[in-house]
Amino acid sequence: MKTAIEMALEAGFMGHEDSFYTNHRYGDCTLELERFVELVRADEREAIIDLVAIYGGTVDLEAAIRARGNT
Image (tube, rainbow, N blue to C red):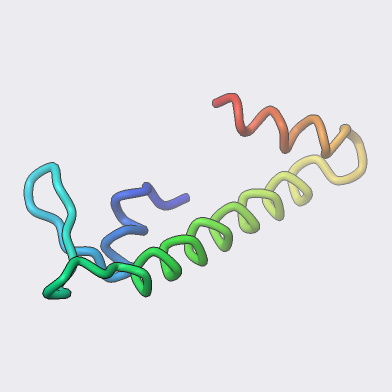
């Protein structure tokens, strides 16, 4: 699972120390934000697939997925 920082950089944000910025003159980062959302969703889908692979039908997958949000 990637970190948020790794996904932000992959989405096109640039990082310097503890801040992020874009290369756009007026700060419009819509494309980077959309790409970031896609990366987060893909990462979460992979995590769900991992849960299914690990637990199969032997646990309440809904509860397992909800529990991920508490970690």
